[in-house]
Image 1 (cartoon, helix red, strand yellow):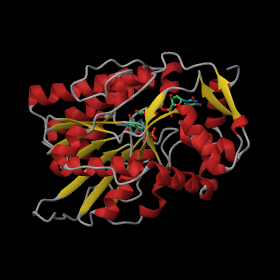
Image 2 (cartoon, protein in one colour):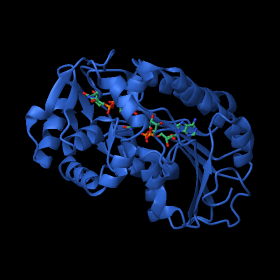
Image 3 (spheres, helix red, strand yellow):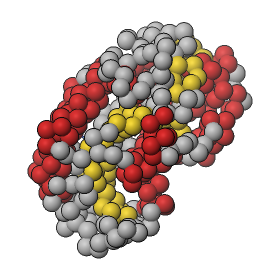
Length: 357
Ligand code: NAD
Ligand code: TDX
């Protein structure tokens, strides 16, 4: 695999060492998406001795311009490809990676309600292809980036890692199925797997089908803001860099076979969040339009992140107040980025999703 290539190639020529003498060679999947691209930026700027390969299919949600500034970094490589492609995955893994971080997924609940099939293919079958490739290549750590949505909705206690899985959307069900496959590969084959389950992320490079970038960019374009149902659904909003920091700590200190919840206890109703965004942007509350609810819409996610905090020492570093403002400013400054994304397929999707609601 060569830098900037569109297919698998010859692999890393240079081996690098961690402080303890270990080589760190990461295979990140889905690194051209929102969290994956933030994670690649994070790793390259915080670990001078880590190498990162990024395997991404470049679906509608994958955007290589997210990684423009690292394309020429010798520690970074890109391979265009599908995690469902067994041959490609096996070839890549024969190049000697020690850690896989699997971000690759279909990630939008509303799209999963329109058509669940790609979610089954990528999120379940694709994860199994990676697990099998990892098993055969003997990697040291397979980190599955999962979500709090696998627990379903709660109106009382926050989710712990022992909470039963009760996914309500096809997206969440596909992620829960992948988690169970990860568990099975750990229990059956001893594959060193760790699962992280994080709450709702926000920050730079998020595809504007998700609530925060949709609201900010619609407000900037003076378009209506669609709010599902009564707008009182609750999410725990985490700044994406805090999620990246959590994954980093898990890679370095996590216990194989373990699950770590990641959340910050920053619960807001959708309406509270949207009014805050409109306030920062100086736009009126009257831009909000209440539309038909999402079918099976989870009322509240709440995460108990005691384990990662107590056992690995992770704590969030960003406050909601400042990070939400920084995020809004990022979209204001990067208008060309989101205008390009909000074209073509996005416009068709938006029409299908919101017209008649
Ligand atoms: P995203 O949709 O922005 O990015 C997904 C990336 O995966 C894209 O670059 C896409 O091209 C790539 N991809 C999709 N199918 C692929 C395939 N078959 N092979 C290779 N690459 C493929 O998603 P995101 O919001 O960055 O989420 C990343 C991961 O984190 C997902 O697994 C998601 O379930 C999980 N997660 C997301 C959040 C959140 O709030 N966004 C919270 C918790 C967990
Ligand atoms: O137009 C909208 N109007 C609206 O009211 C959109 C797009 C969303 N919403 C609501 C639905 C949710 O209650 O806002 C909330 C957040 O919606 P999304 O941004 O679609 O996120 P959510 O469904 O909570 O899932 C997200 O968090 C967990 C990510 O998309 C998942 O990938 C992640 O696993």
